[in-house]
Each structure stands twice: as structure tokens, then as C-alpha cells.
Amino acid sequence: MSGAVHVTVVPWDDDDVARLRDEQQAEIYQRYQQRDIEPDLPPEEMLGTLLVTLDGEVAGCGSLRDGMGYGEGYGELKRMYVRPPLRGRGLGGRILAELVRIAKAGGLTRLILETGELQPEAIRLYRRGGFRRIANYGPYTDVPTSICYGRWLVPDAGMRVLVVNGSVGTGKTAVADAAAELLREREVPHAWLDVDVFRRVWPRPDGDPFAQQVVLGHLAAIAPNLQARGYRHVVLAEVVEDAADRERYEAAFDGADVAIVRVTASEATRLARVAARETDEHWRDWHLARTVELEAILAAAALDDAVVDNDGRPVRDVAAEVLAAAGW
Image (cartoon, rainbow, N blue to C red; front, side, top):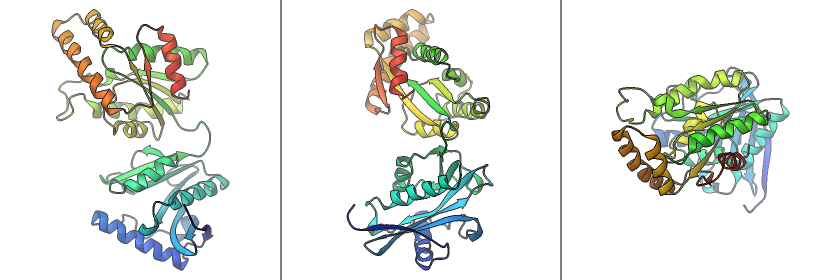
């Protein structure tokens, strides 16, 4: 970024900011062909408003709103906007960082916000800023184009989820179990779940052959109970082959930090493991074919934060490497 950038706290009714908000609302309408759900915000709920300039030129704005209606210590980010010709220069990040600083200084514990599926640049900004997907809240609950994010501002408030990914026969369940044992030895409160248990339904939903929506619904129902009881570390044994699943797991666990670590093994090892454990001929043949297909899918998708070998190694060693790769 070149040029002199100034970020200034101004009143909500500042003339330059008011014009920027009008421009932002016009852009929202252009993208979605509908007005903002909350076009008029109560000035008395605003805890801070920022104006950013670049070389003296008005460039962007953002506001922090009291979000106590959504949770104790919550703040909500509103009217984040940078003029299109000035985007790509880090100005949005400067606004976001300063609003986070103001929120922390004011004793807030969490920030939440809403953006939309047609605003990929905003999504990238928030994710880079440490925000994670949450369930749609308040007026956005039933809006299909809305995407909501949250960020905890205090240590150890949110949940952390480790997804042990892998094809059939890579040993992801055994590794997840060993990882849970290592966490127990370290005296880290945790839960570990073999996700396949939650997809054992019949008939499977139309268009969802692996009952993934059923799985996510179960996890979202379980998560509040785990968090309330202090189990903020959760280990899942699960296949992740859809890029959108990371955010789905974040939302299921209320804005959790999600790490995906894939375990691998040679095709010969995977086939031998499947043949040894599957006694039914039909399912043995299905899993033998699936492990080859799925390994190729997962390798091509490359959705993992790390990949760990699980071929001929002690499972505790593999689990320890998986935990380290997840930053646990």
C-alpha cells in the first residue's frame, strides 16, 4: 500500500461517512437487487465509527455497534465499506483492525457481523482478520444470501475442532482415538466423535448421499452442551472432500477454529486394512473401490492444513504429529 493512510474516529453522523454509507447501500442493492434488511441503524447503539482517508481522499468507513442483544459482551460490525477504486490496498484491513482494537479496549468479548455470498472480497477480509463462520443471527436468520462471522476477543472462549481427514483405510478413526488419549494424558478437556455414527440414517436425504446435512445438524445440537461443560477441544474422524465443509464445521461449533489434518497410507496398506475388517462381501467390494476413488479426490481437493503419513508407524506417533500440525 502506498500513500498516507489516516484512520480517524468520527461521529456517526459525519458527512463523509454518511455519503460512504449511501454508496455502500447502493452497491448492496446493485449486487442483490434488494435493500439492506437494516437500512436505518439507531445512532445511539453505535460505539464507534471510523473514517479512513488515503492521501487526504475519503476512502472508506466502518462502525462498531452494541451487540448486547445477541450476547453478553457482544459487538457487531456494521457499514464496512471501501470505495471500489481504492480497494486492494489494505484499507479494509486497517478499518477492521482498528474496530477490533476499540472493541477490546471497551471490554467486549466477541464481535459478530453479516456479509453476503456475493461479496467474496469481504469474506476474504474477515477470514484474514480471524473471523470464523457462525450461524446466521437476528434479522439474517432466514436470509439464504447472508453469511455471518464471529471472532472471540478473549483467550480460550471459543471452541477448537480438529478434523482427522482421510480416505477409507487410512486409519483416521484410530488416529483420532489416539489423539484423544494424548489429550487426556495432557489433561486437556475434550470430546472425540466418530462422525460416521451420525449419518446412520435411512433413507438418506435426497441429494445428500452421505447425509452430511444430518451430520451437521447433530453436531450443531451437541456443540452448545460441550462448550457449556468446558469441552472446547473437539476431535472428529471425518472425510472432508467439499471446500465448503470447513465453514460448515465452523458454524456448527459456533465460530470454532477448525484444523483439517489428513492421514494417508499406501494403496496396498489401505486395501489390506479394508479387506481385513469388512466381512460382508458387498460392503468389502464397495469400500475397496471407494478407498481408491476417495484418495484421488482428497489429494486433488487439497483442503487440508497438513498431511501426515500413517503407514507402518505407531499410531501414537502419528496422533502426536497430527496434534502438532493442528497447533494443539
